[in-house]
Amino acid sequence: MPQFDPSTFASQLFWLFVMFVALYWVVSKIAVPRIGEVLEQRARVIQDDLDRATQLKAETDAAVAAYDKAMAEARNQAYEHMRVIQADMKAVADKRTADITAQVNKQIGEAETRIAAAKQTAMDSLKTVAAETARDVVAKLAGLSPDTGAVEQAVASALKETR
Amino acid sequence: MAAEGHSPMEQFKIEPLIPIHIGGTDISYSNSALFMTFAVIATALLFWGATRHRTMVPGRLQATAEMLYEFVAGMVKENTGVEGMKYFPFVFTLFMFILFGNIFGLMPYGFTFTSHIVVTAAMAVFIFICVTIIGFARHGLHFFSLFVPPGAPLGIAIVLAPLELFSYLIRPVSMSLRLFANMLAGHVLLKVLAGFIISLGVVFGVVPFLAVFGVTLLEIMVAVIQAYVFALLTCIYLNDAIHLH
Image 1: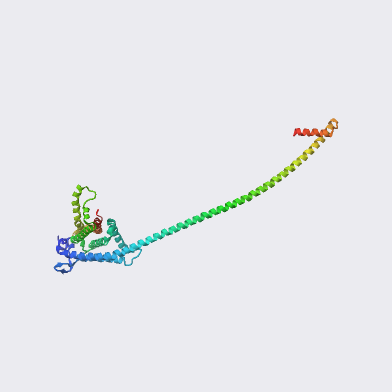
Image 2: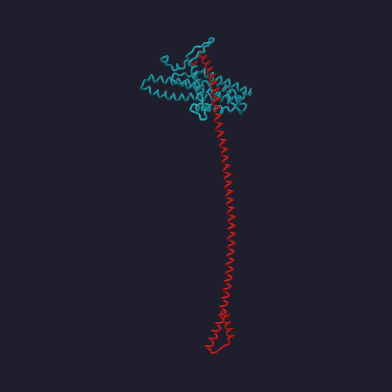
């Protein structure tokens, strides 16, 4: 087996040492710093992007909150306006209703007075007609000519009973 | 073996390419050294090319380099914590060196320097020594408490401490043998199966050919896994030295 030929050991060990040292120099002076730098830079860029994204998200959230607040305020204001206007309108409507009611009530009162007067007139004339009719009936049937005052009294009492 | 050139061990032969002798010591630049050089150049090209135009959104090469970096960095951080990250360049070097050594060894006419016990042992012993030095430097004599299982009663601890010490001392052996044996066995198996293709001819040779195809895929997997295991064990040993238990 060539592996156990000691005459080659010195040269193998010498070149192993030389090449390993050379490779260590390549790795530690070129590979590791350069790749480490790239990876670090990339990590930094990604972190920066993430930070900016977080910041922008916070800004967006703030804008959304401000929008919501403005919206709520506007809504409250609109409600307030509507409430005031409704109250005004209600007051106007109530006033007009009251006015009209009063007017109508007044007219009703006048009409009632007129009706009562007409009724009184009618009742009065009814009394006279009834008394005259009664006298004429008595005169025709009994041939009597009763005293006008007595007949009127009798008619009045009769009307009172029938009423 | 039938012929000298067909021995499955032939592929592990160290062939001096540039003979160098210093003070009677043979330190010739061999095929082993050549493939170590390939691993260094490949790693250098990969990371140099990947980081030439560093972009926020990586291209294919940069993504590959970043994936390797993050894979090993994650392994070091997970197993040794933040304190272990200063050894990350070393673990990364180890991982890339063994990974490319294993993978280039699978190429046709390739040579696998990790299939030589002296190379794997040198790396394992170096790690063992470093870990021990780090352990004593950080904890002083308190480092010996690593050999006493936490919470064990005194009687059991007396029995277990020598076992723990033995398992600690055996680490470089198991570590180097694991990588060496995996690489050796895989390449011998491939060579033997490939030899059957020739001896069985075109018709029956299909069977070992398919076997070689499958084993090659398996060996690519083993090449990556063994590089990972070597780096992972280094992390675990470093963790022991840094955090004791």
